[in-house]
Length: 343
Ligand code: ACO
Image 1 (cartoon, rainbow, N blue to C red):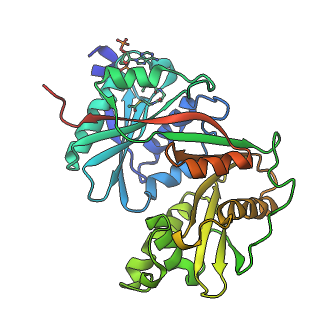
Image 2 (image 1 turned 90 degrees about the vertical axis):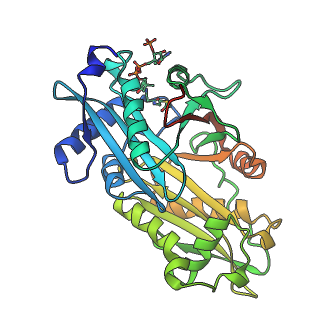
Image 3 (image 1 turned 135 degrees about the vertical axis):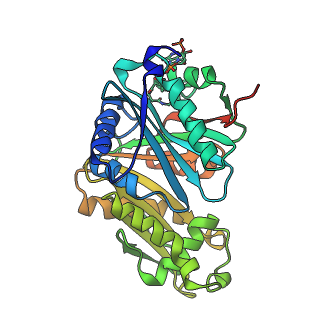
């Protein structure tokens, strides 16, 4: 370990410690690489809120590395409930302090934090270029390999972007709603009448049967969507939804969700779209997404850039996105390394 790494002081990232939180925000803003159609610019309200509000079913653990009183690095882990993994949410060295061993020291802290929480495997999504796609920095993958990580088995993620200035999928309007269905809009908070259905569809990806949706205690049945909403509100995000209701049964046949941070008026994140297994094959997925884009544009006229991501084996959804004008820009490769180093 060289001098810089040996002299680091690690401070927990804690929402109540405003000095450390501010230093972390500046570091994260400094570390944003500004590559077009990669990540949206950091939003301070979203980042600060993320320290208090973890995604549903997870806890967060993070530390900021200081050198001579300056924040020079940070590591943050997402700890899914009851799983053996710790997912690296952030591992960042200040741009002017790279190649001095700080990143390697951060991996050491990640291992220690993961071990403290009983985890055996560290997992990280690393941004890499798609074959034939736009160039991406090869440093992160080289770094992952240098610290002993290896690409995991299983599908990669495909990060896709739609630039509305280049292609407007609403030029031809929103398609007609098939007979027997109606659309229903809502905002950040899901109406009580749909909370169970949205939780079930979201968690089962449309595979759970509606006749089972009424089982179990209300607190469990609705907890997923309500916890998700609490995170969004805590991060200052606004969400837009369209659902499709099967008129004969009154069931929610599917929904789609898009959300915005406070700080980036141009950027929209296209989140989950799910159609229940029994209602597929009617064009509802594309209808939902286009109807929701029309919904978003009514309230967020500055939106221009929309990002979304899917597993690369989810060909139907990637094809649907391509039909809307989304273009694959980069891939997310999952790398993993045991918490306890081999040897
Ligand atoms: N190109 C090629 N190899 C690299 C690079 C690079 N840009 N950066 C690090 N490495 C390899 C080298 O083998 C290096 O050893 P060397 O300097 O003796 O040749 C070794 O990794 C260790 O590098 P460190 O100095 O410990 O790492 P650093 O402090 O520079 O941080 C990091 C590396 C975190 C990737 C930094 O460039 C960064 O913050 N990038 C932006 C954020 C990011 O992409 N994070 C994801 C990291 S991947 C993951 O989390 C598994």
